[in-house]
Length: 214
Ligand SMILES: C[S@@+](CC[C@H](N)C(=O)[O-])C[C@H]1O[C@@H](n2cnc3c(N)ncnc32)[C@H](O)[C@@H]1O
Image (cartoon, rainbow, N blue to C red):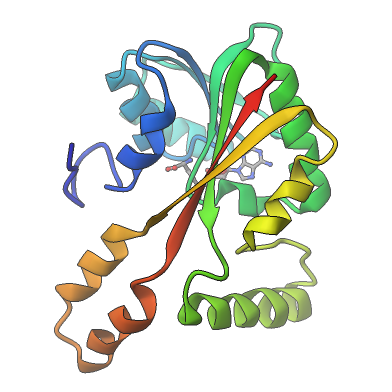
């Protein structure tokens, strides 16, 4: 199924990411954002709990999809007694957390899932294109570490991901696919410089990490 860019359910890549979610299952949308993800999951007949750290973002999400449960919480702390079939943490939400926060989120996800349940995380592969590699160094190492004194990471090598899960019993699979929509957007741009960019960008890869609770 193809989703156009301006589709009410959001980003066309979402369809690929959410193909790992079973229809009608109980899903935690971790870092739910402003509603498109929750709405999409509801269209898949899922029972959805949206968790976000921001009260205002939850307010926006509720306007777009009122028929879901929302909880304002930090994913670092969020634990639920009612377990989930799937936890989705999409579109670089994971990058909002530093290494220790991310580890806690992954531990909590293990707790929050049913046995056999899946944690799905998406991020970009730092090594997938020349452009992304350079940009990741500038953005991560110069802008953020120097100006913001931040320990957030933005892009990862696939081998780094294994460390996030090293102290858990998750079975981890990594899938990769080319970030179609960015290429399509650039193709429609008439600017001369931007026409050169697809050359560097076209190999950008999304990593879809699927971690299964044993
Ligand atoms: C890039 S947006 C992604 C939104 C949504 N998942 C989507 O795919 O459209 C990241 C979201 O994660 C939320 N967030 C960031 N850190 C968080 C944390 N520690 N706990 C809960 N939510 C968090 C932000 O408020 C934001 O809404």
